[in-house]
Amino acid sequence: MSEQQPPPASTASPSPGSEPGPGADRDAAFQKGDVIIRVRNIKKSYGDREILHGISFDVRKGETVIIMGGSGHGKSTMLRLMIGAELPDSGTIELFGKEITGLAEQEMYPLKKRFGVLFQHGALFASMTVGENIALPLREHTDLDEKIISIIVKLKLELVGLRDFEDLVPSQLSGGMRKRVGLARSIALDPEIIFYDEPGAGLDPVMLAVIDELITGLSDKLGVASIVVTHEMQSAFRIADRMLLMHGGNILAEGTPEEIRASDDPVLQQFINGKAEGPIPLRLSSRDFAEDLLGG
Image 1: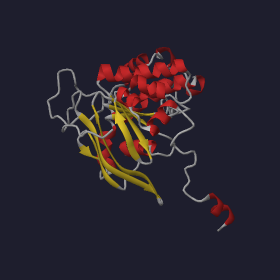
Image 2: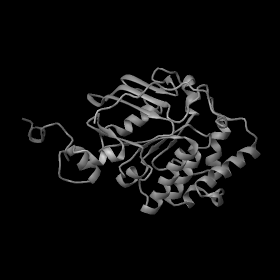
Image 3: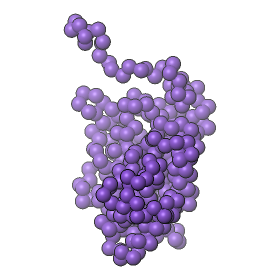
Image 4: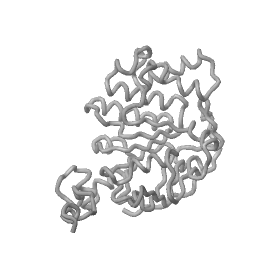
């Protein structure tokens, strides 16, 4: 499926009740449907291996975009570039209308307060309680009174269904509960974008469905844009507004869940159906095996 270029981002004024959350520097207002992330011709190499060959796509406010693909095909690299953890070799990435690839850390700092990240294993601080983990971004990035912070922590825990677990430490929680706490922390500053790195990894089907409902709820109720890197196809089709398949450092296919299912591309069908046989090779190395072993 060919990529269709969307219209330019809207510059409409904010609607009533869309004031920024605590600690956020919102110098550009985005309404649902506006382009909030713009990626253009991104290339990235590690040594002699080019991971991304010129990636371009957009994400709109309130949209849930799934980035899927086999291991080693560039989806996690793309996520790290979008959150500013790494720099591309070339190309541009715009968040909230600002090009970030050339920004100094102090210039990137206000933008980072406008998005949240749910890491694959929650990335909670083991020495802190659940409540302290969620309060951390509020204490670091705002001047809010501790009483207000305590109320916000309770509200975020209620959103993820863990209101009674504020005083426990991460080691006392299950994997699914730790992930929900990580999600509560990622929304502490009321972000406009949330990046999810394999949110379903290690979860049972029921807990995966719970996380899916939380993701769709944030998009539907708060207009949060969600970028989800995942291998979980059942989850992906359940929550996606749009899906991107990355293969060989390129976007092989892009479309709605219905368009993705209906595609006759053999690589896409092999991936979404989890088949061992097909055009996706098991062996990723390009070196000749016999020559490598025998030296000639």
